[in-house]
Amino acid sequence: MNTSIGFALMNIFKEPILKKAKELSEEYAFIYENGLVKYINNYYDKFSNIKTFIYRDQRVPFYDVYFPVNIQSNQKRIKDIQKLIDSKRYVSIIGNAGSGKSMLTKHLFISNAQDCKSVPILVELRQLNNSENTIEDLINSIITDNKISPSNKITNQILSEGNFVFILDGYDEIFSINKQKTTADIENFVDRYSNNKFVITSRPGAGIESFQRFNNYDISPLDNTEISEFINLQFDKHENKGIANKIIQEIEKTSNKHYKHYLSSPLLLSMFIFTFNNYPELPKQQSRFYWNVFDTLCTRHDSLSKTGGWQHERKSGLKNEELEKILFWLSYITLFDGKYSFDYQSLSNDIKKIVGKFNINADIDNIIYDLNISLSILIIDGLVYTFPHKSLQEYFAASLIKSLDDNQKQNVYTDKFKKLTRFSNGGNINFYKMCMELDKIYFLKYFLIPEIKSRFRLDIESNLDKMNYIFEFLKLELGFKKINKKYSLKSVAYASADIVSLVRDGMSFVHVFKTIDEIIKGDSDFEYYLKNKGEEIINNRGDREIRLGIEDFKKTVVATVINNYKVINDFSNSYDEIRDRIKNFENSLEIEQQGTLDLLDI
Picture (cartoon, rainbow, N blue to C red):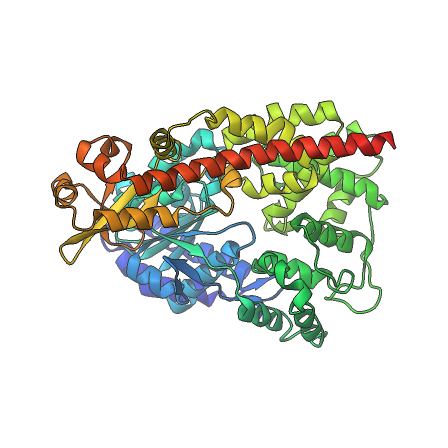
């Protein structure tokens, strides 16, 4: 371990952090100082050398494999994320499963520690799910090495100095039952200690976009050049370096052009690299990527990280089918319990339940060894076990659901999924897409169609009513900024719950908002309303703007603009498109069911 990192950082920040806490005794000064040193050293050692899909059996230097993703706002791509954070101070980073959020948070921690820019504190927000503690309690336990603070006043003084960068990871993993309280808690913490820098990450659809102080940025997908650069980087110091060109050539085949949207995800691209020796062709479905990974882990042993037929010992003595059953049920149980990582006792208890139900005869410790060492499908992170990525857990859980009988599926897609949507507000769209791919008929029949029909009215006929309903259904808010004495529409916020996002996948309202922007220019009554509304917020680029919502749309002067026939027609068309998609789901279900019945009768 490079123990100098924490000390070097504290040598710079010790005095500014502790100088205001004059009543701090030497004992507690020691606790604070050494708690931070131990924390920084521990996480620096943990992140500076890591395992990846390719290097599963050895830790490699982080920057040998880290590919710097870009983030973007309003189509503007940003490469230097640290510079952005230093400038904006409050940054939310939004990315789908496998987009590179986890690697980015590690990079931010390492770079801040190495360059002595700020004292980095990484907070996994899911830790607040099963605790009465506030985020401040959690952070205080970090900086005092889990010792009790002598007083809230002293902690307040230390955190107020502005020397920290707080990396708040996984907003989408907060249970929805806790979401309102935890969100308010986070916003209060940011307000109280606003001199510091804050980064918060999330999958889309969890509501992170509504944080008032934060500037929102999306992780950019890898473009064609970056895909090649990513592959070359992974093999730059690899013994099997020549395979990189073969992988790039396969991806660049004209026949594979339409698969590249999968490979724009660093995670899925890593999976394809890992499985290339055994599965050199690109699969059509995302779920097949996960199957290829699992099959490679279980049955194929000429992995990229070892040459020859090397194979780990199976200590449990179980066959692949038995380990698969344990893994799939473990993923299902833990996903619906909202657990993405587990200590040994929790993991042991869950596996014990599974093997007991299916009369699988094997030692629990040996099963854990095989899942962790032999297959590398569970990774040990300190004292905690995790999946290599949450999306793998989602794939295994979806595979388990697919294997159930009709009655069992009905129960899962109704009762169990209600629990999932209740406890997780956002972040499930990847899991839903996996269920759609693997188990389309039953997913549509028992979950998606009933759920969206219970949320979305299908009987509206008037174009004006359709527009008003879309505004209400999506909880639209429009943000206007004054530029050269004229107001312009600069931001749009709307609800993006998982179910709605799944139905709206690929739809865009950009053309609608361009129409609104054209209409408001030169409308003196509308400009007068905006000018006198006077309630400004910070938009996702850090600019001040005036935000209009549902209640404003009812005002005559606003309604006159919004009710312009062009806008009405555009929103009416959007309503029709959503309704048509729901009907297409119903037609698809009918066709699939009839096709199955016809084939069964042959």
